[in-house]
Length: 148
Image (cartoon, rainbow, N blue to C red; front, side):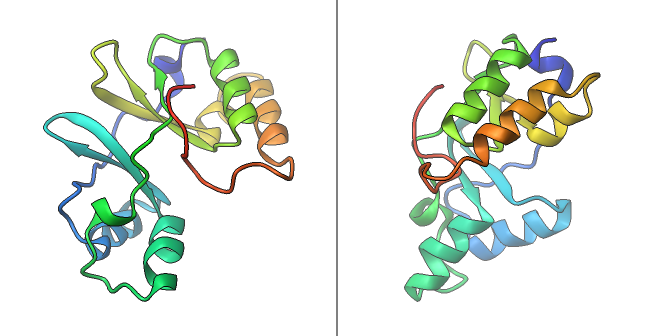
């Protein structure tokens, strides 16, 4: 199965010049813990609820802190035409639970999560990815690298 068949297409995007309070409100509105960050129709980062807590609040920064100050700019992603089994293995290896999905022009077209993989028929890729993600000792970041 291709990523485009499993991904979530309706994705809210934060801007780097928005505040973390704005990002947190968007996350609350859609009941999500991550937002892609886009600028000029390009994916420039990701911000997670953990980024807001650990990189901002824990460091004494307030709600008016800009997304660009706490987002991860070195983003892992996958392409919409990749095979979900391979992407799930990469998610396990990299210990990430969700990936932005881009087309070949590197424009954001969706997001792929373990939940998306789990609802696929025979959710073996999700189980394998979750097993890999759950291994101790990985980098403690939702992002933290480049293209898988």
